[in-house]
Image (tube, rainbow, N blue to C red; front, side, top):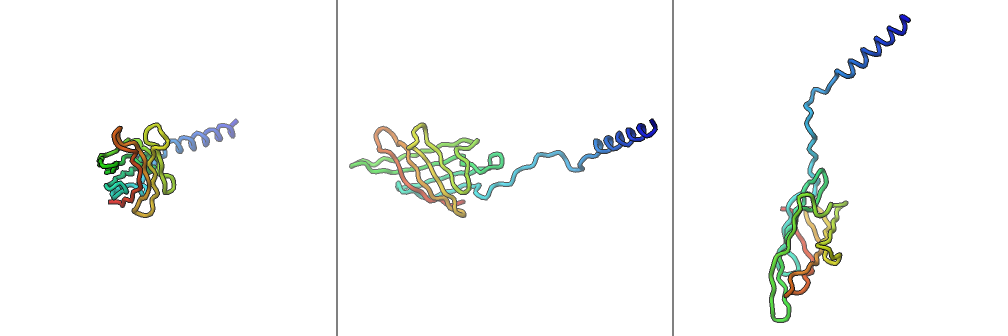
Amino acid sequence: MRLLKTFLLIFFLIGFAAACSEDDEPNNPVTPQDPESVGTYSGTNSVDSTTTIVISNVDGEAKVTSYTVNYRVQENSSTYTGTYNESNSSGLATVVGSTFTFSIGSNPENNFTGVIVGNTITGSFAFPANPLSPMVAGTYTVTKQ
């Protein structure tokens, strides 16, 4: 019986000591480091204008959170200019490896793709401009700012 009491006392003390020990560091959440590709990229596109892409750290993952494509297209004797853009703070696409792709709207032919190499992204896009102008499709090269 005495051995049982001693065993229970030791077991209790070990459990108490383990429960009382606590890290001396504050209980702050860890902020994930930004993935290397995070930043704002700007450059030119093949439809005679500019493109901007923003890649953000969303819960520790690199995600495309916005893009802007300015365009200028010629159709017969008419020139159409405009801007196509979209943003979503939760992310439009996750950068997987060094690539991303996402659909623009519900038509899978309307898309935006990119490949990241160092501080440069190259890719393509296709989207409807407006009822008066043709489909806008092209390529782009942007560099990290």
